[in-house]
Image (cartoon, rainbow, N blue to C red; front, side, top):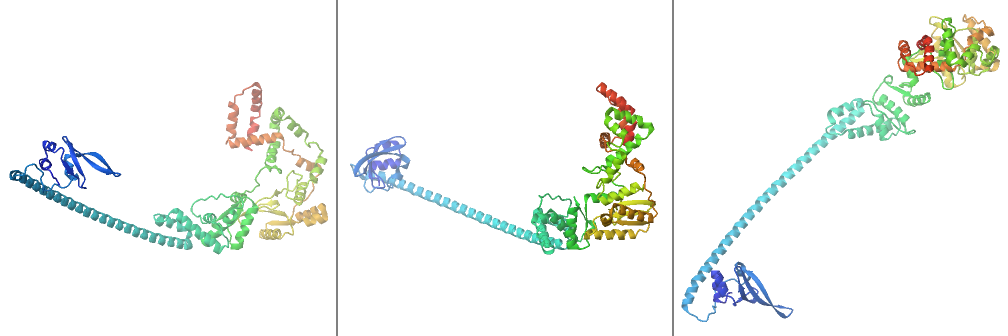
Length: 567
């Protein structure tokens, strides 16, 4: 309450001079604390008042903005007591219009503020209502979207389960075409990883149920891989052979693949036999082809002659064949001197050995030595057993031409009997030495060979066994062979020792033959013809005098090299 008329005028008129007249007047805070106006400037009133802090009075000065003065003090109501030194009606009449005007202004201000407050409240309510409506709409849209996504997921999951069921039926009924169905219909719903997992699980279950085997998932994946080429890399003992066998059984028994449409290859006979035995346990007689890589090569090529190659620690067929060609040219008077010049220049030791023949032994000693060898015949070839070597020596000593292990076609494979004596077109005598007589499997094979030759009346079959050789000796063994051959019209007139020596006097494989063999191998690797080789010799430039001399000698023997190369 404003208890001083000067303070009331200052507040009512809100003029600086009025406020300055009010300096020194007392004012009362809304908390009933009294203070005194002690200074006024353009914007602020400075009021000091007394506060009680810790039971001690403390004078404080506070600065207030003039426009906010009424907010910190009691409401400005019409004063009930106006302190003045003179009380007169004229002053009251002068004051009442100001008070009424002030009250009207204040009332209007309150009404305006109330209207603004209500307007702000209404806007706030409307804003809140609008935001709430937007929130509800967003929530509704979110729920609708969630429901649509849920329904879409449910639909896709239902389609996926339907496709998975169809795949399982294909695995059961048409396994080979399951991949085509997956690629055409399922890739949108089922990943390739999921498809592979389903297939591996099915194969694993089928093998366990039908083959009494328990492959892991990786092995099952290899068994069931029927699309394109696959390569399985695994350590020793990891089950590669079992996986291969189970794959063949799965293809044949479940996928209805005919056995003649499959081929299993192994690196050696032992592995091939093991695979064949495992397949036979499940399939009896209807098994697929199982063979070694070498057997496949023979089946494809079906060579009428033996392949020439040098065994690492045995027979040197290729080198001996080449040496025979060299020896043939050595006996040719037209080229003898050229060979001699070439070998004397670079292979003098070999030439001297050829010239002397017989090596370091006499012909008699050489024949006795050759006959004493266990598996090497008089002709220098190696044979599989002592009995075969005795047969080979007998045929050579009686000048009977023969083929050792000539090929015959038997049920799709190459059959190579021990000795074949051809007496005419598609006729002759076949000699088999059954060296493992008494072994059950070997005896079964021997019976099959006897049956085979009974079907070919143009061929006479002679069988010999180690029993005769062991109990009656080499002479009686050879006598038996002689009687058998003579009964089929073969003359068995023994050659003299000198004649036999002339047939076997081919020297051992010498350094010159090995060099020629390597040279020919190099030329063939470079695909050089005789003409190209001769051209290279002609255009070669020598780097030294020694090389030029060698080239002159090479020019003289160029024909020889070309003939050896072509032969």
